[in-house]
Image (cartoon, rainbow, N blue to C red):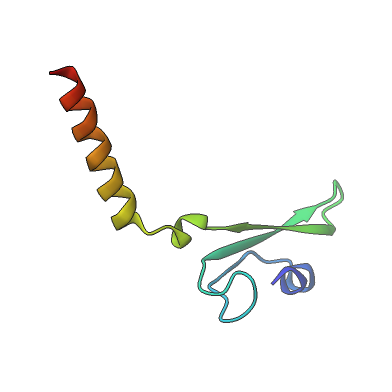
Length: 72
């Protein structure tokens, strides 16, 4: 994706089907020099896509219950 952005000079939004970031939303944007030339590309990966939110909120509920019990 980085190479694609360097060649096209356009922002790319994709969910790769292979590689390290397979299945995770990725956005890559070109970085420009002062004269407007593309000199680099910056990619951002949505790491929240890797978290099982259901289990996180289940654990959060039990923590809240523990805090409430401790107040009694």
